[in-house]
Image (cartoon, rainbow, N blue to C red; front, side, top):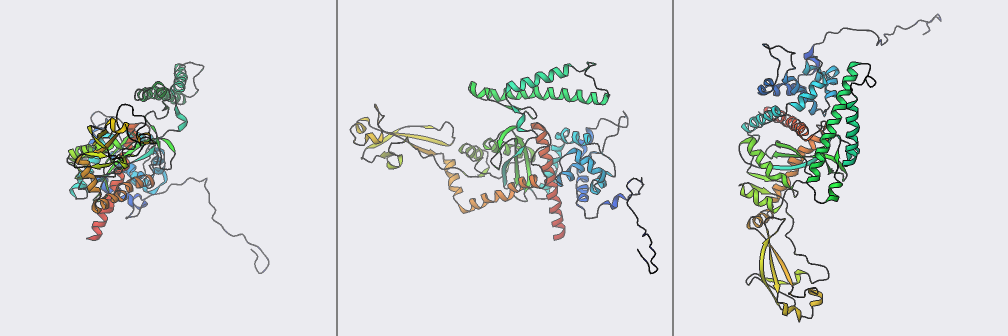
Length: 494
C-alpha cells in the first residue's frame, strides 16, 4: 500500500496455521443449547429402568475386569443416532470425535465402533423388555389404548447385493475355495508379516466359510419348501445374507429384503409391535400380530385394521373367533366363471325360494351338494346340475355344454359364511370406510418416518434375528421421539 510520500508498507495478517498443536479447555455443558433435542433423549432414557442391561455386564468390583461403557450412554447414543438418520456404528463412533451433540452425550469420550455394533445386536432381549416397559408407561399415560390398532408391512432391503444371490453349484464352489484358504492358515508361505493383519485375515476367512455353510443350510430349507425337481434346482440364496429373500419393492423392482411388520395404536400413532419376517406376503401376519400384542401388553386389541394383503376370508373368521373386530378390504365373491365358448352363469336365473336355477331355455338346474373351498376359508360352493335328457335335446347345447356326454349343464353358486357376510355388510357402511381410511395416516406414516427420517431403508446388519433387533431399535427411537413431542405438547397446553 502506498502512502503520500510514495513509500509502501506491508499489512499485518493473522494467517491460518494447521500445523500447530493446541490445547483447549472445553465446557462440555455448553456444547449444545438448553433446548437441543439430544438433551430430551438424555432425560427420557435416564428415567427408564435399565437393570437388565447392567445385569449382562460381566466385569464387576469383586471379580475385576475391564470397565464397561455405561449402557445408558450406549442406548442414548443409538437412539440419538437413529433420530438423526445414522445407522452405521462406524459413523456413530466418528461423530463422537467431532459432533457437539455426540460429544456432549459421551462426555468427550471416544467410543469404539465395535462396542457400539456389538451392543446393538447382542442386547436384543434386553431391548425387547425395555420396549415393553416404554409401552407400559405410555399405556399408563393413556397414550396407548389398543381400542384400534393398524397393521401394515413394508419391505426393507437386506445388507446384500443381488450378485450374491446364487444357486447351489456356485455356492458349493465358493465354499470349496473358502475351505481351502482356511486350511492354508498357518502355512509359513501364506503368513503375513504383521500379526494383527494375519489375525484379521484369519478371522475374515473363517467367517466367510461359516457364512457359506449357513447359505447352503438356508438353500436346503428353500428346496424342501418347493415341489418338483426343476423348482428345487432353481432355488437360490445369498452368500452375504442367507436368510434374506427376494421381494418386490415399492418401485416395482426386486431386491433381497425382509418384510418389516408394524402394529401402530391409532390413539397417538405409537408403535406397539414390530417384527421382521421372511415372507413376502402379508396374509399370514395378521393373527400373529394379535398374539404378539396380547403377549406384550396383556390384552387383545379391540379392533384391528389392515389392507387387502391381510384380508382373507380365513383371517376374517379366525380373528372374529378371537373376539377382535376387524376392518379390511376383501375382494369380490367368486363369480363362478366358466370356460370360454360356453353360456356364462349370469344368464341362468337363481330362485332362492326353491334353491334352483332356471336356464335360458326354461329347464331347471337342481342342487347336487356343496363343499367348502379348498384354498379360501369362509367360502362354500353349491353345485347345481340340469337333467341329462333336458340338455341332450336342447338346441343350444353346442353353445352351452358341448363336451358334456353323460350329464347336464352344471353351475356353482358361491356362498360366504355368516361371519364373512357380516364383514361385507359392515365394510359397506360409511363409518367403517372412514375408519379404514385412517390406516394410511397412522401405520403407513410410521413406515415412512422410519425410512425417511431414521434412514432405515436398508438394514445395517445381516440375518433375520439381527434385522429384527435393528427394526426394534428404530421403533423404540420412533416411540421416544413421539413421546417427547407429546410431553412437550401437554406441557405447552397446560
